[in-house]
Amino acid sequence: MLARGAVGLLARLRVTGDVPDALRHGPLILAANHISPFDPIVLAAACRVRRIAPRFMATGGLFRAPVVGAVMRRCGHIRVDRHTPNVGQALPAAVAAVTEGSVVLVYPEGRIGLDPGMWPERGKTGTARLAFATGAVVVPVAQWGAHEVLPYRTTPVTVLRGVARSLLRRPVIRVQFGAPVDLDDLDPSVPGAAARATERIIDALTDTLAPLRPDEPDLPRHVDATRPTETRRRHRRHLNAGQGV
Image (cartoon, rainbow, N blue to C red):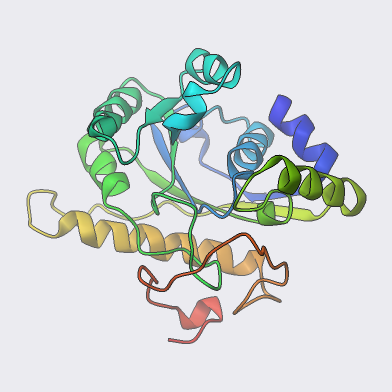
């Protein structure tokens, strides 16, 4: 509810697509693209609209923050301590959550993407391994516009600047729930299965994102000067996403 109020204050939220009623309360894996620190608030608000209450896999820094950390723990979100020896604990925790019947939201890219066009990057295999371990359905959730509210680098100055601009302009943020990703023909015991499943998940995310940015097929109109770019993890491009090959 807090997320819905925050997004309503700073932007105009448009949610399309849905998940089947049978999956709404889990077990279910939501796989979302990651473009801004504002993404979790946007996705929580969109899930509220669709009557879904996911547990987020979120960076450990949020759990260490005053007040926010206590809220994250109380709400049952799952801590991911990236670049630490504890990072391996995140996947078993997510498996347990999905097995218990939860909806878990993950970012298959593993970070805020740095693709110059802000299209999904090559993913990490964690989402695929989570799906294999639980047998849960994976639904892609694409979102576009959160990068206009908060920049990549969040300092007091950049946050205040982004919030002030958003209060005045109220950009449109679009979220679309896509069709479930078909992984049924993949055998987890076969070498390379997780990589192939990851490709399908990122493909599905790209295809779900494309209709949300028809006028920005190559580069985003809004330029975030704080956001670096790199092509090292660029995912193969799709003609049907308007990007060429």
